Image 1: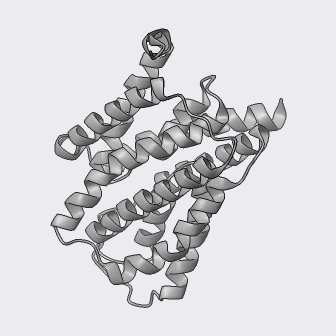
Image 2 (image 1 turned 120 degrees about the horizontal axis):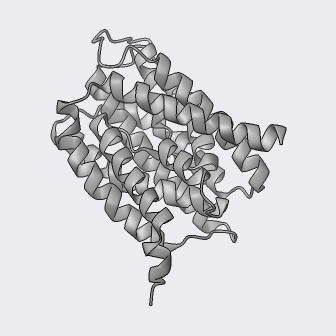
Length: 259
């Protein structure tokens, strides 16, 4: 029997509420929400080895609907997507498999979240330009994808929060195709990173709480794709989220670097 005391505790229901809100906001702009899930879990007493797995599972549940929608709309340019994920998948698996200490994980997480927050805050070109840069090469795409995939696997995110702004800044493709590409990138890297973590003997996850979170983000993701985009602009959502992530990242770095 599941331990209902764990599931029904006030602290955990507060986490559930935050995950629900994050899923709505991120799904509205085509992301999974992994960075914010990590930020929320990092401030709890949950075992750090479980934080990454929980975040990736939630990522998968939220973003899979986006991928299906973009596929139906024929917005996926497979010729440009495949080089991006060719090296990101095995490197995300490797990043997830690596055994890292709790201190190293939280320092890496803090730095990653801080970079993500800065990237989100400064990426003003979202959905604003249809100019396409045709100079992008498969090797360049594979390099970007591999680096982001490896970091994503170690930390426990899908990597879309880094990839999408980079693609926008380089006019990689139209905004909608970039969103579709980011969704696929998040999905495959999240799966690869999760499999890498599962292969590690230290893998651990509390299914009592995680199962509730998965249901929560699924519902939030469905609502986000249908409702939130009618009330908030992508830039507004990203600015608000960037502030939250920056606050958490600085708090983590202060604790593990200066205390």
